[in-house]
Length: 355
Image (cartoon, rainbow, N blue to C red; front, side, top):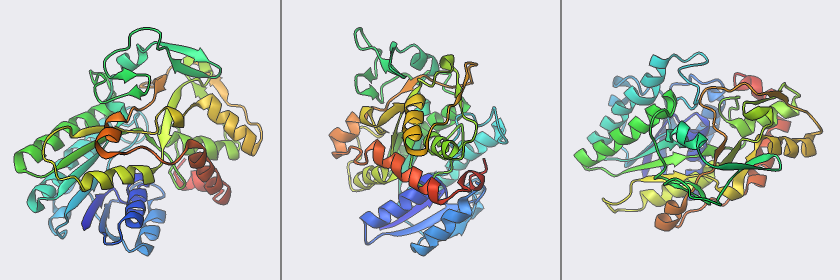
């Protein structure tokens, strides 16, 4: 099989390429990346050693995809990954839509031309921020916990947030681009007869991730704690109780591999993929983990709210388990230990990541 991966030199794209090559011995991968992200050159060198055919190209330019060879499948991992994109940092709101939405049509036209299956890496941040804030939460130790003593809204359960949870605005500018991308990809697949899968991914985490305060939070926190950088508990009374789950890209690769093997043309096309309750922790709990490994380093409380922050998000992957027999296999402790080991061996990683 021959696969095209856009955004191949980012953390998700490069990790998926490596994991899929490990899983499938007969695989050929063509990688596409504009190399804008700090640290992407590091991944380019690693992928070339693995035999990935890399092209320096920008999916925003239709002409950059015209001469690519035909493939059987496309994995679209090219996007700005920050929920604050468009309102903070160097990326303007217009650039956010160019990167995450306008460019999508060019990749879908490639799939249409070659009748290649299409996998969209979407995001947990397509879910309604007011609905997430309205979830009944209690405090248990140093973390928020879902209060299951009363009724929960559709799409929320003891396992977490599923596909059916509200996507009503606001979801953030970033989240709106991913939600619109889902609809466009599904419409293209239906209109032009190629299979489309959409995976709403929770927090991906692992060694070599480019960590920043607004993305790659597990990697950023571990690297910054080790280097004694200033850390802050932002919002939610400045206590670090906000909770997310994490999963490793190799586990996402297993789900994508399973989806590529399925020939059905109808039924559910959107799935949630995440670490689940077993792979979840709060920022305060992550600090405790870092303290045990690296020695104490106390974050500063900053109770001022930040746009788009949410108190609790754990992904419920029940439908992916039901339809594909998929569940994350890498425990959170192993993910954190992998990041920590990488941080210890790469003292300049935050600078490499552009932080």
